[in-house]
Image (cartoon, rainbow, N blue to C red; front, side):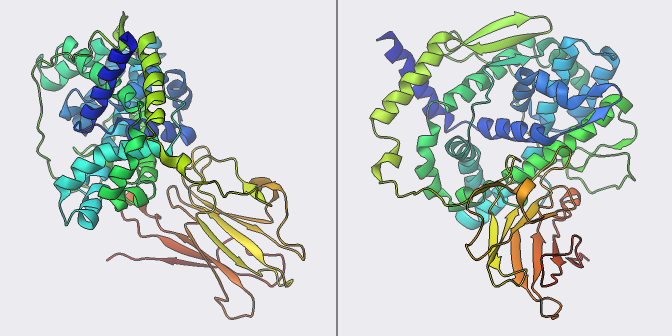
Length: 488
């Protein structure tokens, strides 16, 4: 009975989550993906290893929302200057955790810009409002923030989720004092606000994925474009997170004086010619008062004080309650996937790549490229990434024979007959494919679309690359023709 009432309390919190402007699961997924291929060494610090070493601080920073001001560049600059002044390298554990926390904050900053269309056109929620809500950004915002978490929990695997968070409370208190020039945020306010977000994160694991059909009916655009929309979709926000990670690494080691630091973090530039932009100062609605602890303050998570901060971790009854609620929901038939017979049969061929989030198969086309009279397979993987190169994309070609395509499991990175690779981070080379005789020489050529080329300048002009065929097994390894949109 005790477990039942505890679980009822958690279910109530789940219902409350729908009214909370969170996006917690989505932000944590963005941080997870951004770290997958981020690679930066500045001075004596390997920042990738540092973030991997302190995931409890990195994930917590991704959801830091004590103040609206922490979403903007001035707070980031203050934090970087504080770290450089207070924690000279080599960094101890407390300093490393603070740095990891700051990386999480920065990822949240730039993700919010493209998701919420802050000082940019065509961001995700703005487009969603135009398509599904008769132009109403407010309605799209209300549906999209929590709806994005519903989709994330429905579509993605969160086994990597940390069971605890570390909050550098004392350092945050000092940073806020420097930022405001006075004490505005008390330590207990920082602790309580983050504690609530920690509970929200685990509240979302109770079963918000079961709300998928509800949010799908509200916004088909959200379901269809959540991952791949060009400006503010998940893939795009991951790119901007890795971009800001490189900038923070540079500033932590070299200072902020050589960087262009407008209020909007997506326009930060370092080590390059500064270009003044007409940056609009967005109105911020900030809550600075004391935060009242949740009714769950004493239930659900343990609050452990450590040097320079606090650690939140789920206690045993909460973990049991999550399992209990999950079983109850399944018993109530809230998961409808079992209602339909499974018609999937074993495939005769299975082709794969090792790069996660590669989107292998996003575009496919068949044609006789090598002129042997048999069909060949061309497959795009626009999300393909390598360490330090995010979403450059690849295209794989597998030649067929009289017996068809190779009937085996095949690692395309190793065994594909032809591998073509993109040229720009976040270009998404391989998003679209066409086979045609472009140069009218009697041989089929391959045209590859990379729609997000130019994303680093927020232009997204895109490019099309044409690779000439020879009628044999050879295909040009470099594009013979590049078509690029020119903006006036």
